[in-house]
Image (cartoon, rainbow, N blue to C red; front, side, top):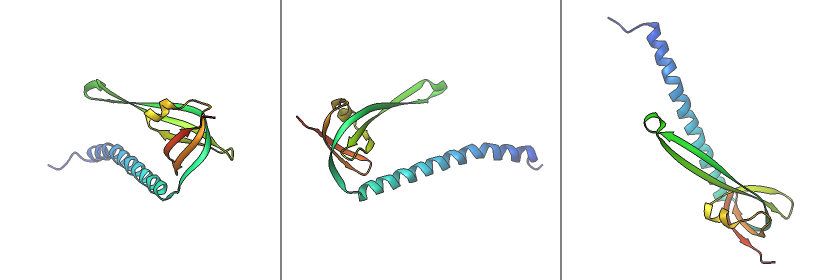
Amino acid sequence: MTGFGFGSDLFQILFTIPFVLVAAVIVVTIIRNLRQWNKNNHSPKLTVPATVVAKRTSVTHFWGGNNGALCHTSTSYYATFQVGSGDRMELLLPGREYGLLAEGDQGRLSFQGTRFLGFERSLT
């Protein structure tokens, strides 16, 4: 006896499509991250006068395990800096750096592309 016919083929196609889509999203994300990493590595390291104009966090929850019983939470920390030209840039920061910054702080921002390298607060 041969397979189950058209219904089996349709099930296989419908079952495969989500896996292909998820794999494609993962590959595209990896490629984008590698491009940004490479662009940052080829950008000059700059240190400029800047002011902290905003801070924000982004919390992500990952559910897993049986019946979603396990939860992992991840927090990303961002600060927006305004440089002397009036341009603003939002950079991802380590949590320990985020906690030391306050809106309105002035100092010298060090960065490379979109990579935060440090912020030295001025005492004036």
